[in-house]
Amino acid sequence: MDAIVGSVDRDPTKAELAAQAAELAAKKAELEKELAAVKAELEEERARRVAAEQVVLRMKRDIERLERQLMGPKSERVLDPDEQPVPDPPESDEDGESESDEELDGTDAGDGTKERKKRRKGGRRKIAEMNELRTVEYRSLASDQHCPCGCGARGHCIGEEISWRLEYQPARIFRIRLVREKASFPEHAGPGPATVVASEPPGISFALPRAMCGNALLAQIAVDKYADSLPLFRQEQRFERIGCSIARSTMSDWLMALSGFLLPMWKHMSREVLGGTWLRADAASHPVKDATRVRGKVHRGHLWAYGNYETVLFKYTPDKTALTVASLFPGFKGTVLIDGATDFNLLERTDGVVRAGCWAHARRYLYEALKYDRKLALRGLGAIRELFLAERLVMAAPVDARVAMREELCQPVLHGIRRWVTELLPRQVPSTPSHAALQYIDNQWDRLQVFLSTPKIACNNNDTERDLRRPVKGRANWHYYENPGGAKAAAVYYSFIGTCMLQGIDPLKYFVEVFGRLDEPPAALTPHAIREQWQAANRSE
Image (cartoon, rainbow, N blue to C red; front, side):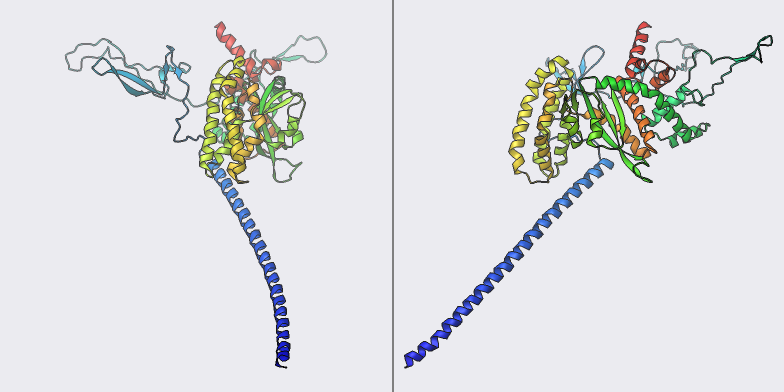
C-alpha cells in the first residue's frame, strides 16, 4: 500500500519537471532570439560606426587636400629617404662644356694629385649678358683729375671698373593726334558742293577704328588680364594713377569686340590641331553668370584646353556631359591624351579615337595615399619616378627612335608595376586611399600603356595642366565671368597667349603686330606664322 502511494506521489513531480523543462527551453529560445537580435544590432552599429569613420576619414582627406590647395605647396614632389633626388640634365656653356649645379675645382695637393673641391655655381643671370635690353651708359673720367697727394701730376687712363644695375622705366600713355585734311573744290562744275576728307596716314591701322584706343593699349590690357591675371578694375585704378581715366566697362567692351576679330584665326588653329594624329586635353571649372541656366546665381561652366606641344586652344562649354565632350573635337581621328574621367567615355567610343591615360594622375592618387600607407605609396611613387626618368630620355630623342627606347626602358618598369598592383590590390581595404590608388591604375591600365606605341605623346598630361594654371589663376582673382560671352572671349585670348608661350614669343608684341593686320588672311596671323615671319626678317638683317 505504501509503495502504491509513493508511486502516485512521484508521478506529478515528473510532470512538473517536464513542464519546467519545456518552460526553460522556451525561455532559452527566447533569450537566444533576443541575443541574436542584440548581436544584429551590434553588427549594425559596428557597420554604422565603420561607415561613419570612413566618412570622417574621407572628409579629413578632403579638408587636407583643400588646405593644401589653398595654403600649402602646389608641388607634389616626394623623395624616399633611401633614394637620391632626380638629377637635372647638365647645361652647356658657350664653349660646349657642361656645368653641374656644383662644379669641381682641381687644386694641387702637393703630391702630384689634385684635391677635388666643390665650387657652387651662381644661379643669377649676369646683367652684362642681357643683350636684349637697352643700355644707358654713365661714364666718370679719372684721366682729367690730379694726383691725390697734391703734387699736381695729371693722370692717364689705365683701365676701367664696370658695374651693372637694372633700372625700370614706368609705362606711359600718350596721345595720337590724327589730322586729316578736308578739301573743297570751288571750281566744281557738278551739282552741289564737293568736299573730300583725306584717309588715315599710311602705315596706321587700328583694330577698333571707332574706339579711342590704339593697338598697343589694347594689347597691354589683354595681356595684363589674361596673361598676368590682372582684373579690369585694378587696371582702371592703375590708369588713374598715371592720369588717364578709362572705365572698366569700356575696357570690357573693347576686349569683347576684339575677340570677334581674333575668332577666324582661332578657328584656323583649331582646324590644324584637329587635323593631326593626336592631341592632349583637360578642363577646369569656371563660375559663369548664365541666366538661361540659373537665374541670379553663378553657373558652373567649364574651360577646356586642348592641342599639341606647339599649340594650345581653349573653349568654353556650359556643362561637362558626355555629349558635350564628344562634340569638342569634331572629325578628329587619332590618340587623345586625357585623364580617367568618365566624361570622356563617349569620346573614346568614337570610331578612330584612341584614349591614352595619364601617369601623372595615377601618381596623384599614390601621393594622396601617403598619410594612409606611406610604405605602399612610396613604393608606387618610386616606380613611377623610374618611369618618368626613362621618359625624360625618350622625349629628348627623335620621334622615330622613341618606340624602341620605350620598349627597352619603360616596358620593364610597367611590368613591375603591373605585378605589384595585381599582388596588393586584393589586400587593400575598400574606400581607402591606397585601394583607390591601386584601383585607378588597374582600371586605367590599358589606357596607361597607349603611350608605348604612340611616339609623339608623353606618358603624362602635365603640359595641359600647366596651360590651365593661367585661367585658374584668373578665376581666383575675378571669381566669375559676368556672362557666357565673356567666358568665350576669355577662351580666345587664353588660346593665343598660351600658344605664344609655347612658341617662345612675347604675346604683347604678337598682339600689337596682329592688331594692325587684321585684314590679312587668318593663316598669316597665327603665332606660328608671325614667329616664322620675325625669324625670316631677322635672318635678312
